[in-house]
Length: 284
Image 1 (spheres, rainbow, N blue to C red):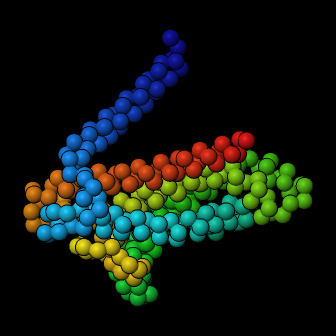
Image 2: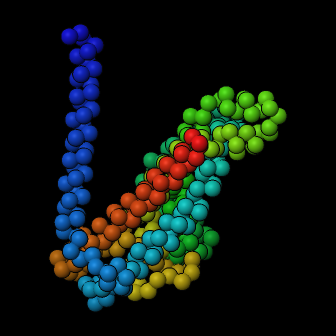
Image 3: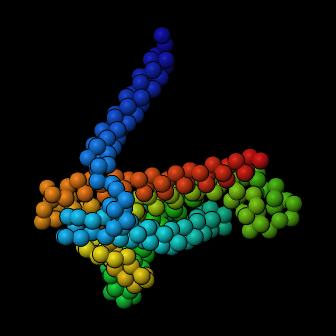
């Protein structure tokens, strides 16, 4: 066997081993959470408010609060992020300034979430006086998700062949007509992928909402954007580390973790279905 073939064999073997380790770790973690948390998931657990110091009842306010803040995050980050990506890729010239902007956006993707939480406290809670609320938390998570949306959307736009644009412009279409009819239909599936990953990450974040709106205990659902809210990741954090009877509520914490994983799975499943339908429509 030649040296190149050995290199290829070793390379693919190493990749397969890495994938196997990752899958094994994922299966172990998922099974541990499921085995310890599925027994507490009942209709009451999903639809009732916590009571008796969160040792009984359910997590309905936390589910609703997580849903509200995730939807608000999507409303803020998706239009702004996709619009920014379209401008950078389709309209902006390749200058030193645009390269600096792109580098800054990519660097912001790696900023720890706690930094975004402090940013949200200063800007949204104090300067703009939104107080600790769904609005402050949603805008903070929106700012945190924005770099992911911009980066993934711009990369998806780059995959569309330049010939599609040239052909449309040659037929007399305007720049925006070209983007709307010849670029976005092919780029949107890829744009959605990164966007949903960013939203899934935001749904599971604790640090940003810890300072900007999440409450330790609220036995009711929020009625407006100016209200505080309970959220699954913060509720899980409290149940796992700060509760006065951690051993007693540990099964409830595992149940909360399982519901949170299920919520993130549903978000990704919806994105997969939408992406599949868009690709199917494009092929037709």
